[in-house]
Structure formats: structure tokens, C-alpha cells
Length: 424
Image (cartoon, rainbow, N blue to C red; front, top):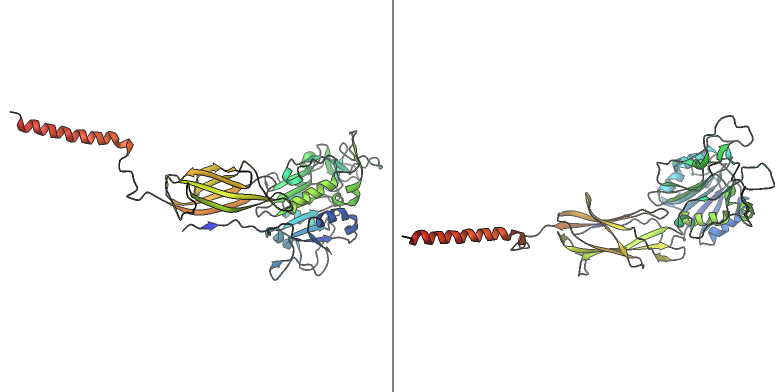
């Protein structure tokens, strides 16, 4: 019998129906960052606010997680309360849940260690901030070049939405770098080539360790289990003050009535909480061409049809996912068939191909990985048998010369015998 390995889908059918724990340094952040919190609530999330040192803190009870996402707006916390620690936060992510980590100049080793576990390294100098003497925001405080105006965004509609962010994003905080060898970590907002990380209160005596576009202002991680993480060195990035302030980038004549922060944090939070770029695959089917039932096994050289339906969560409903880079493998130790799937634009993907002339236990495999989208990993096992003894062709076309040679030899021997016996 054919067996299948279903795609493990760690989220509910409607990803917006989730509870979020928000840990704060101070309850005043609820009002100073209310615009961001209200935008998350408006999308159907239930936010529970607690102080980071609350002695009753716990992410799970009786082995079940109480929350589906965690927001850390507590950069100065040296130790979490209750049973929560950095290992518990990492286990939370390893279980397929989402995380937002913010830091600032007061960031403790606790927050930095969580970031390191996620593939991000903050500047080791605790007094350093991102400074840029070219791409700073013009303000009333002349010479304050720690308020960065950045518009170097990642080019991904899945992460930042299809609507272009016109105004620069204001950033005031500390720098971090990502490991280029780690393909799971992406820089979403980068510093300009003229930026560097140093103490703004002291004279620069040696070259800074982090400079230019190597500095990431905001990074995201999509783990292999599809958990999503956002990491930034600026808690002010989410503040009402920066979300609603006017902005003009140094050297630019354009002045914007409102910074790009509100659109930026709203769109990226949609991605982190799976309101966008969240795929699911259903109805994986295969059958012989011209038939409707799924067979228990195939025979070599059978013509078959494979199909699967893929949908994307739009924030309100499941919509057909349309792409031209989805492939299926017919796999045994290595792919014997690699076929691109065609789509009807309504979520259905299919392809037809011939079973290879090799028998054994094969798998239909779909491994789909695309920037900004949850990964799909599906497989279904099916055996392939050889021809039975009575299924081979009785006369093989390519063997006609040998057939002819045999009959010619027989005819020749018959004629020779007649001549030999009756010739005097």
C-alpha cells in the first residue's frame, strides 16, 4: 500500500486567531507605542502585556504553550521573571512560534544572547550607536547624527508588502550584523555605506568594527520550522513619536509629513505574524492518466498525473497562490524526474510525466522555498514494479532483423535439405 508523510502544519487554520505575550520594561510603553500595538490588535490578535520581571511569567502550562507569539520590548531587563529565561525563549521559537526582539543602548546580555542564538550579533561596545553623517534625519538638534533616515529596504513584496514605502524610516539605536553564511537571516533595513557604529559622546580613536552596509538596522529570520523572528536595535522604531514625526533626509530636498516607520513596522509585523507569505498545501493527488482513482502502485513506463493545491493567507482568507517556480520530484535516493508544475491560477498545480524504467519505492516530493514565504515540504510514497512476465510485448520492433535472420536460416536449411536429398 502507498503511504504518505503529510506536511506538518504548526499553525491554526486561521493564523490571525492567536495570542501574543508582550513583555515590557515599563508599562508606560503601552501608551508611548500604542499605535503599533493597536495596529496588531486590529488584525485580530489578542495582546497580553506583562512586565519582563513579573514573577508569574511562563510560556507554557502542562506542556502546552499559552501563546503563539512573543514580543520583547524589554531591552534593559537583566533577568526575566518566573520560569522564563533565554533557553525558554529559544525553545519557544524551536516549537514553531514567532518572536520580535528589540534592543537599544541599554540592551543587556540577556537580550543580546537571545539575538545571537537567532543568528544576529549586536555590537560588543555597550556605548556604541549607529552614526551616519550623510544619511541622517534633519532635526532641531544640529550635529545629532544618531537619528538615521534609511530607505535601503529588502526587495520583497512578501515581507514588506506591494505598496512601496516612500518616506525614509527613522532609526535611533544600536547596530547589529548578520552571518552571511546563514541563509535563514535576512537584512530588511540596512544602513548606508557612510554609517558606522561608535560612541557618539567620545572621539573616535580607532576604526569601528561595524561600518557601512554591513550594519543591519532591522533583520528577520525564518527558521526551518517556519517560525519567524524580527530583530532590531531600536525600540524607538515602534514609538508613536517616530511613527508620526515629519522627516527630511540630509541632502534631499524632499520633506515628508510622516516617516515611513508606521507603514514599515505594520507591514513587517504582518509578515512576522503570518498575515502574509503564509502558504499551505492540500489535496496532494496522483493517478494514472485517464483514471481518477489513486493506485496502490505504478508499473514502470506508466503515464501518470500529479497535482496539489497551494493557498496563501491574505490576512482574512485563503487565496490561491500563483507562481511559476513550483516543482515536483519523483524521488528514490535521487530525483529520477524533476518537473515544473503548471497552475490554473486558482491554486491548483499539476504535471504529467512517465514513470522511469526503474522499479523500487519512490516518493513524490515537493520542496518549495521562496524568499519571504513559508517553506513547503511534502512527500508521498509509492512503489513502482517491473513488467510482469505476461505484460511484455510479444514481438519487439527492434528485434525484427533477428526474427528475419532466424526465418531465413530455417528456409535456407529446408532448401539445402531438399537439394541434398533429391539431387543426383
